[in-house]
Image (cartoon, rainbow, N blue to C red; front, side, top):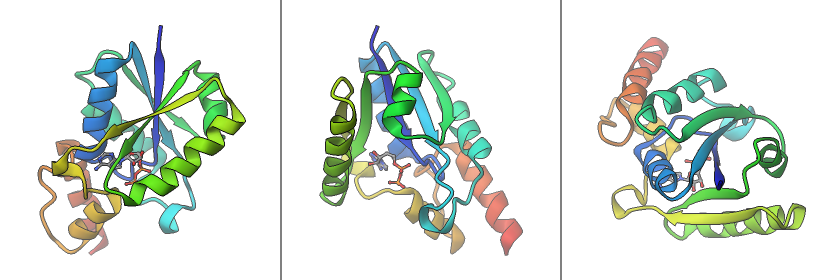
Length: 163
Ligand code: ADP
């Protein structure tokens, strides 16, 4: 059985992330979405780990071979813990390449039995990122279609409260 691990901060989950998760779930027997706690990323996440996990759970409930787990360890250690042998990453326009290439090399050095595989972003989501979504939402713009409905509603509530 091939189990994959799709890691990220998912602050919050976007339609681009979801597209990668759906495509990976179609290839692998089993996929675990690993939600990194990432307390320091970009000044701290907007949503708590529990909220980020629940968004992914809600948006992937139609995918029977997908489970969601938070993690706060080295990625290869987490892969071991859940017995995943392949790390799945999404790749957007050129900017992602260098960072992802470096991380894949380092993870390969840490454990040669764990392979990293990349799935290309589709053109619709090529320039979509969690930070862009937060920026648009913060300024009152519409993020409909850029994020799953559950995230759309949560963003509206969270940002309305902070105004
Ligand atoms: P971000 O890079 O937006 O902060 P994450 O750390 O949560 O997001 O990213 C997790 C993974 O999802 C990374 O491999 C990243 O390249 C990928 N990813 C992010 N946005 C997209 C997108 N729009 N299309 C495809 N892959 C994406």
